[in-house]
Structure formats: C-alpha cells, structure tokens
Length: 82
Image (cartoon, rainbow, N blue to C red; front, side, top):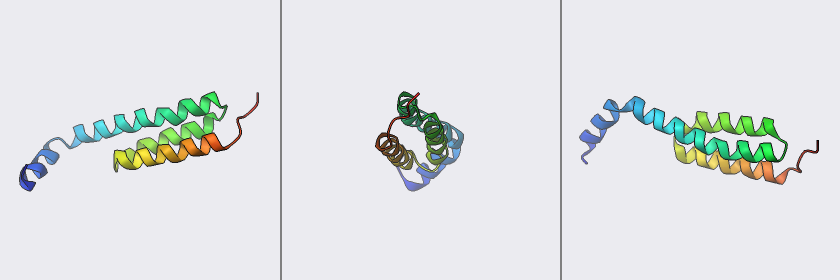
C-alpha cells in the first residue's frame, strides 16, 4: 500500500477504525474488571475498564499496557474480605 492510499483508507474509514479500537479496549478492559470482581475490588476494575476504553482511542497497544498494569495492581493487593 502506498502512503497516499493508506491516508485515503484511514480518512474514509475513520469512524470504523475508532469503533474497532473502542471494542478492543472494552474487551481488554473486561479482564481486570472480572478479575477485580472475583477479588472483591470492583472499584479498581471499573477504573481499569474506563482507562482501557479511553486509552484504546490512542492505541490498542497502550490499552494492553494499561490492562497489564491494572492486573498487576489487582493481584498485588490483598483480596477484600466480605
């Protein structure tokens, strides 16, 4: 693909690309959300989901990094007791 055709492709499919990135961010954000619900830290999981969604608009790779960081935070803190 030539750079001009790539630019045209991106301009024509901008909203589709953004929607795909949001879906990827949501799916990735579900990982820390579900993990945090199992460990009794729902608030941290919701924050992770929101951050994953927002950061996924920049790049799904950055969203993956954010998810890994939140998973580490969730696993390192002791589980909440009911």
